[in-house]
Image (cartoon, rainbow, N blue to C red; front, side):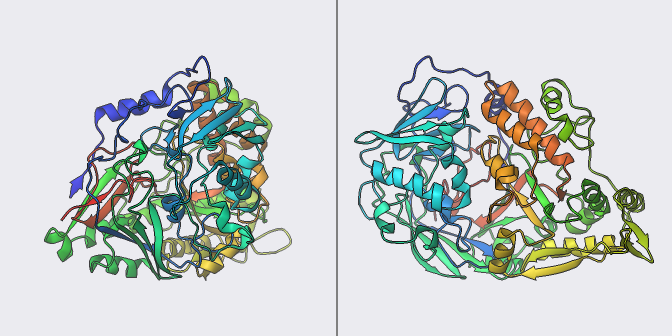
Length: 605
């Protein structure tokens, strides 16, 4: 096994990055990169990203497994089910995010970036070498068309930024300026992170319906082969325009082939890995990691294993309750359902109690809420929205802890008491309201998610102890996406990854403006003035101290909202892979995250 640990300087660098005091340049001037606060860590003449190997050889292949199915390879529109990796693999943008700095970007398609004194505008200058994979130049016209089309007809993830643009204008042969209509320091960074598509490819087509189109982009990989529902294969473009041109790209996208294979369930995917069909596997089941990673390929050194820590927030993983529907619109019901979930028993059964529980949305990071009452600037920010806060936000909140026994008596009693406060009592063995209507709901799961199904089986048994007979429904990938896009569920599995640089995406995750947007990311349906107000504070903070306090306050409001039943967190990554695959010893603070595999990996016999 190859364990990985961050050097002390990496921890120190994270602290400096997160808590440095704001330092703005005296005057606007073109730069090679941009940071939310202060200056980017890498100088203009940097050779490569610190966690990439600029001397990595090219060649070889990496094959990973996805569960379920897909029917499209166009990740830029709402229509269709798309492998999640595609937008990170072919979606080249003006600038790229460093996984070693929470809030820094460096030029890719753009050779320079310039901002107004208060970040009220940002201007990019394209590299003259930039080309699409068909050899045609990337032009300002392509950039402007991409931003407007994605913002008005593309996937909802792009819509919010477009509404914040006051004007978009060409300022030179290769330069474009965006002026914003609100004060929001992050917008200058977001402007550099939209994928640039080829306008000519979509002329005469309905962009929103183009799910059968393989997008032409400027990235190092092109989609070379695919069969819907079975696999998609990317091939390294030997004529990629950025080779030897873009420092951000040195030592990245070294593998000749990157392939995603689809399987019906986790068991089939694991067997494919054991037999060599899949060459890299990310293991989330600690019990399987401890007991089943001793097969011949591991024993004889054909495969290696590694445990990789990171400093990312835990995010939120668990089972989300749809507050658009009764009775989940009552926080007391949600609180009772959290008490009825016997995490300690589930954790022992699923992981041997080796996985810590998620305690808040930003736990495992300096942005997570502190235990006990809110203090200082965090309390000051929360009191601005006191009328909208639920119990625990100001005074302190912690998830219920059971004694680990199957019956979970104390928490079941607490759940029944909370249900009674909300008007639900046990009547002839059934939990019902005053009119005798039973409390009943459906838990929607995606077919093939065997681990989630096992957890829910235990939860359903716990719910029976309070008189609730929950129904479990399974749907294939397409049906599952259709239902969740339409918010047609009571409770379902939920995973929301969060970063050390939270910003405008928070509006998409739990902002009021996305509550009724089909295909949106606010699955819980939360509409809260406190949440929207704290997101605004995050985006307008003029110091790191205020930024961190605003995130900690948001973490309290989200956690005490009791929208999700949290399960365990993954504050490490467990990887097993073909021993011919390699990655640099230097790990970024984000760890195993989009932008790391396959990006900085290479192949050596």
